[in-house]
Length: 112
Image (cartoon, rainbow, N blue to C red; front, top):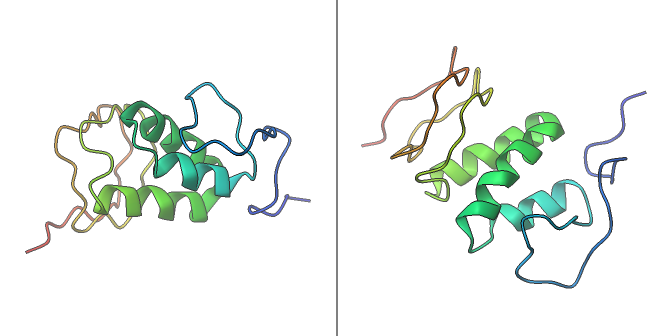
């Protein structure tokens, strides 16, 4: 049986009460921890959170798309990321390294 995406999983550890979470720190709450890291003021932390987000299926992918659309991932190294079928309309992909990324069937339409 597949675990529910919003509940902590075996790869989630507990460390809480910090507003600036170090990149190497474990975070509480699975997808909630990923959300916190995507909102981090540190580029390195946000970029690492992208790959963690993708462990949570569609909900995680939606977080990644939202981060792109909000310009939080400008200049990120996302080499090899699987964004197949993602709706990236209006996403700010400036300077993002998407080499070897799977963008098949992704909507890359520019917003006007």
